[in-house]
Image 1: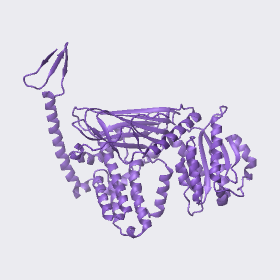
Image 2: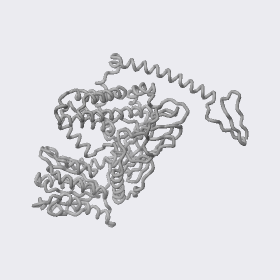
Image 3: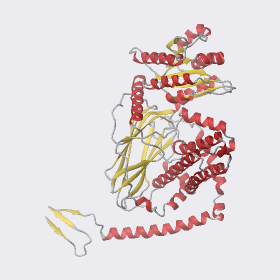
Image 4: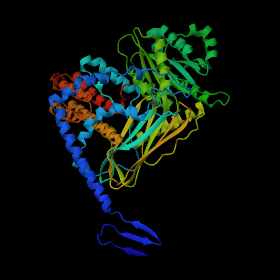
Length: 621
């Protein structure tokens, strides 16, 4: 073995039996390459700064068409993207599965400001954090989807604020350039905002999820139990009959239907039966469905438990092919004790893998807190009243089930040895009790789907790394998870694994992606610019939520400061964001909310919801 040091000291070569291993010091050629890159980037930075100043001038803004035109373009969704498209033999829409390069062309304008902003690096990115998150933890899901609690909060806000006081409706995530899966229900991607490793620094990791456009053409068979509350009969007995008739018409031959009435004791009006048999049974007996004479305070909770037992028995019967378990509660009124009991029952049903949706009949008055039951049961909340038909409500419920392309989406992120997590943007780490509830529901739903569709049960064991569980994911939706990291060496940054129940192919599925940072200098990629734009949007969302807290504590100056921070971020993202922040600033500047408790609560909630929508609501298509 021999060690030779060249006279110029540029490289050190170690020879061992004919093999040569070079050390990490750069050669003269690499030094020249790096110097050229620095010079080229400096020229690009100077040009971008000059362009930025020009565009920020009034003439430059007018030349770009101004904010209002961009907002109108954002709201004017292309009709072609809203159509179903014509499916080919593979069941895939050619319009929706367009090449990535074609889709990215539409993002160029939106990324110009991002590129200018990051031309000069923020020195805070080089400051090492004092604390890090553990290597293994669960964090709260931020994908909103059709969550009942979210939809109810949105409805209540809309009722408390006038149409010109709802800037939260404009708050959405950005349109993403993710590749949709060719055949699976879900695809995953992983990217970072840094082009290469050039020393210890903070880096943002993005995990992107994209739902398949192949949805709505089939769904799994359903086992549906309708639970009728005594209050529903009192509110509108004819509507109760219409619910059952609509379900009979719209359920398929492979589905099953049963009916339980909440009375002095829960009564099984019709056992869980195939649709043809259910039609024959109800043809002669439906007129006999009447309101019970009396019912105790816990009647509804007991009836939901009875329906759950019937669903569980049917699923365990080896002679039958079970369906996906759904309980539809038909109720009315606003009894807090009944709502609380029904919510407990709905949560218990999730642990056996059943979903609870609620149809609340009302006469235009207060609709009550029944949305809490749907939220606890991972289902949908429907409030039927006025001119809306019951058939339309049932059709909406079945359509939402058909839109689901993935269930039990567990996202697992394992970091490389040189990466540590600082925070997950827009969410929080779950405590031990919350993790236990998430895992119990996940395992129960896994077993239920295994019985219902023959999808092998594959949950129960924890994976290493950072994790979150998304109960369901809709077709065509995209979602972004952003994690701030401290990276102190080149190499693998993260491996991402997504396990889910594929509702397109009715099978277990796994999607994987990984990302690394090498030491070799390279230009910043379009993916890195997209990550940076999403990071700016997430920080803007956090600023809106901080403004919400300031409003809560009657601190108008603090709220304005947070909105000014949001405005500074919005300058580099989109005209829509600028409009959202400007409208909220106008609302905060009013003095009415300081002396009106209801208005202050509405403003606080609208700021909070706008931040959540910015992170978890996909952009309109």
